[in-house]
Image (tube, rainbow, N blue to C red; front, side):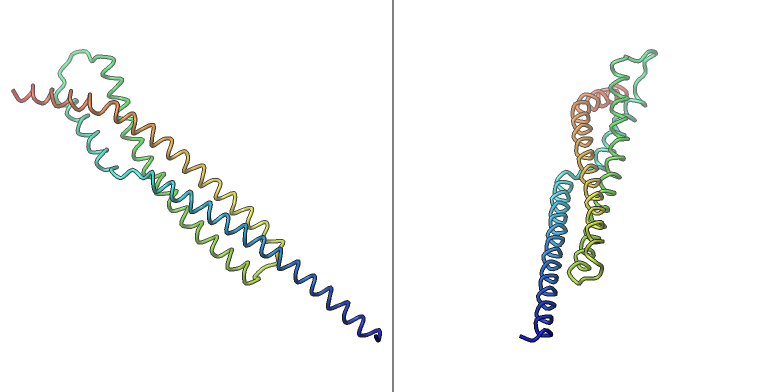
Length: 186
């Protein structure tokens, strides 16, 4: 075999091996991005399953009870336990606003991250940048997803805590406020 033919065959084999290595690296990176998309979808489902459906109803219930008590309670001294419960009830009302904003912001961040991952996957599949840069991009997107997951966990924990507090206080305070209103109307 002439020298040029051997050189050409060697060059072709090196080029073929190089292409296979790049293809394997690209497939690995595509798999990482798809795993991130799955993590994000799972987080979104968890967030959506914990949505507070009745934010306005809860706020209305709290403000109605507080207003009835404020307008109809005529004591020269307020019972300390009642004052503590009423203050805790008011705090829950403020927390519900915060929880709603947190939910909306996290949901928006998830939608933005979905778009970012789709763009990253598109660029990766179409060879838009060199492969070394994609590892850095993927790490950055993973950090954003970790932040979204942490925000979702905090939201769910705070939601459960505040709704449990609402449920423990609402019946008693609502009954008390309605009793005060009834006495005032008599």
